[in-house]
Length: 458
Image (cartoon, rainbow, N blue to C red; front, side, top):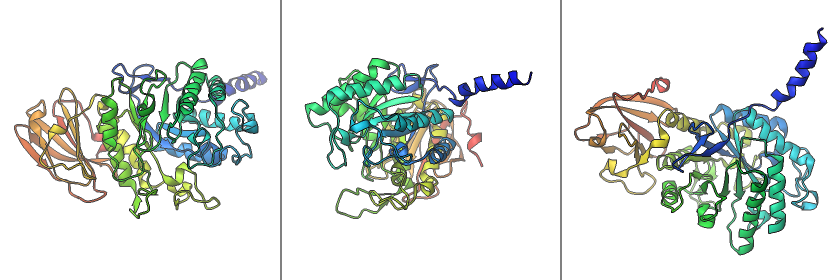
């Protein structure tokens, strides 16, 4: 009799081994955000792990994915045909992705590892923003290449991928890959790949990862396959992430907009210029994140120079990578992204409206530029100060006579009570620290509202 339970266990085990099935994501009714199938808000908190599939073995993949899940990330962006000689340098298991570098001939051994990443991510509650290829495979530019795509084989490749991953609900397809679209053939390749994917997969969301300083809609604004607008604000402290969001939201066709590649932690500021601007740090990651989300983005993707390339001492560093990826997992910016998601998720963040008229006085558009947002009911105001500058707020805009004021500390995820404030005039709020790295989020809430910050108190 003991053999029957054992047989049942063996039969059931494969179903559990595939992990949980995450709900498909869709566009919100207002076309501005992402929600799950049952209309629950989805917070895209991504991480750039471009070389994950190409460079890590299964144990290392497990370590990376578990770390990001533990820190609150919801999505991992990675690439099948990777940038760093992803066609001819084998992965950690010794396999290359294509037979004879032909997009119409997938190497099953390589794709078993792709399968593993997708399924392991699902087990941990993570979505995958999956790039079929890096852009140098259709427009080499500064990359390794080679250029292998034509419109014809791009469509076939899209069909092969979509058919293979049709049943996986935790995928978002991301075309492009950090290269400009410079001629009609480039357009045809991307559109053909999208068409191929749509042949077998009409449910999963599709977007495009553009070159630095551009949005997906700069190239494909009229294309109906483009569900999400994505921009790369780039690796510069001068980048105004909020402006990309505002430009996208002013487009004729409303789409959710994602900051898919902002300034990375632990990378040289404007590394492509022949000047020394120092290194970008965790404050840069936070500023880009809060600027993006408070201006109306549907999501934000953190990045680290050491992690996107999975750098270790046995590899040649790219863009002056200086910290092994295993250690870089614990750089402060990644944990602080979880704090960003946690505080906004405690609020009706998809109802927020950027409103700079709430900020009174001087607010120059430099690295200290303050950003304000409020709910339509005006029972909640958020104001972000990147360098701890004092904030003068028009409190008369709050729909209450008395408000509760709090500081949220983006470095440790904690809330500090300021106290009750009357709303019959403006008031200046001064953080307890200022200068680079001293950013704060001011929370002003209606006392009668149901906002609860007890989970954020020491």
